Image 1 (cartoon, rainbow, N blue to C red):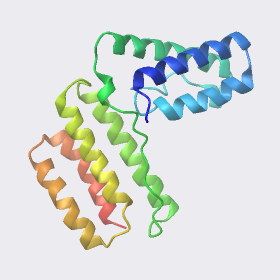
Image 2: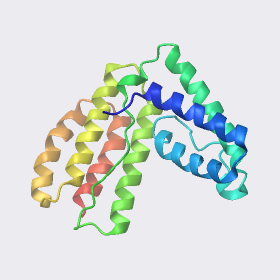
Image 3: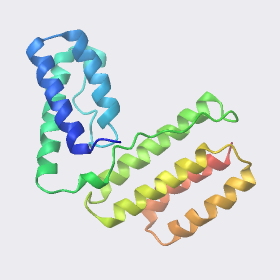
Length: 183
């Protein structure tokens, strides 16, 4: 069973505090990577202020991560309903028909689209759930090893859905669909 966002946030706050108490640089490096993998697609502007990949000051990054998590926990406690936005890790199953570059482009596109949605729609709205479900649907279609014509048939329903949305959202979804058809 997947833990709630609130539980994950609390767990990582404790981990950050422990690493800062221990002043263990190797643990800080590992925690930075782990926390980034867990929260990059959930907390907007996660990467801002994280410089250890350049400076190697991992403890500074852990301090920054701790502050990001505390602010995020505060938002959760104020009743913003982030619980409905599960920790979505953008995954595209390895498709034998896509080369490494194509897979990377698609995963990167889904990540950017997901972050844009989180930045531009209220987290506690019903609309964001609908939109994120469509992103999941697209990811599912992208991960299937099917012919281009079969993929096109599945994408038509999503195109109908996009038609009923605003131009900004369409501008985010259409490149994903184009990439999926260009394999």
